[in-house]
Amino acid sequence: MADDPKVNRRRFLAGAAEAGAACVVLGLGWGAVSMRDANARWVPRPPGALLGKDFLAACAHCGQCVAACPYGTLKIAGIGDPAPVGTPYFEPEKIPCYMCEDLACVKVCPTGALSPELESIRDARMGVAMIDPNACLSWQGLRCEVCFRDCPLSGEAIVLSPHPRELSKHAVFVPEIRPEKCTGCGLCIKSCPTDKPAVRIHDPERTLGEIGRHYRLGWLEADDPKNQRSAPEPDAQPAEEPAPFASGLDYLNQEVLP
Image (cartoon, rainbow, N blue to C red):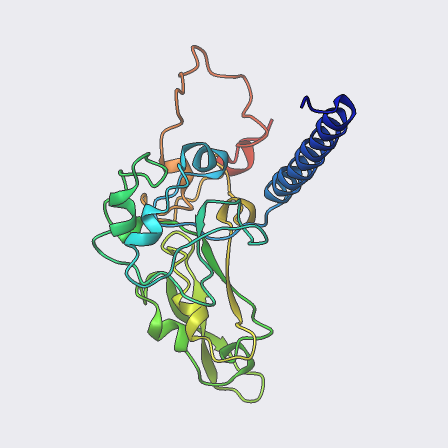
């Protein structure tokens, strides 16, 4: 007996409606994911991670770096996590980077999203620590210094500086961050004893300023990262003839009046 054409037509229309609804739901889902990824907040990535969109373009979302991490620091972002879906990240307030000397996560990356040029964990720049002096116990005149003692680069990335104590004439020692040495590992966050950590890891690109090459800081050592004038200008070409007057950027330092 032949199938009823009306029944077949109803089945076709019902199937088409279901398929259309599925496409709409899938499209809305991926649209939401894309929108969330576009607005994802900054979180630390593994050591050697390329910057910004270069990392997102190179990362294969394979999870090999996560599997290689012996401390369970790294995680793969899912929907609702603070990083683009499928990419590795870590939350230092929960599990910091313990700065493995063998760089296991970098070595297993198949695409170079974690740069193989990173040879020492001391040169990693996963972020930069910043201290809130209003919440730091040492800055309130109490003896703490826990972050200084727990920092794997103590005395380099975190130093203790004398600071006047308001309650008496005696000075206290307060922790200060040296951004050029900080790896962004987050061990200082994990050890901070305040209810809400007084130190956080931030995006260096959005947090740190830059003095500029037109300032001459002759009292600093040549290799000081703030003394950018000591480094040669990229692709700089010497002027054929000296300008009749010193430029507006330099005449104060040269003591030349226009």
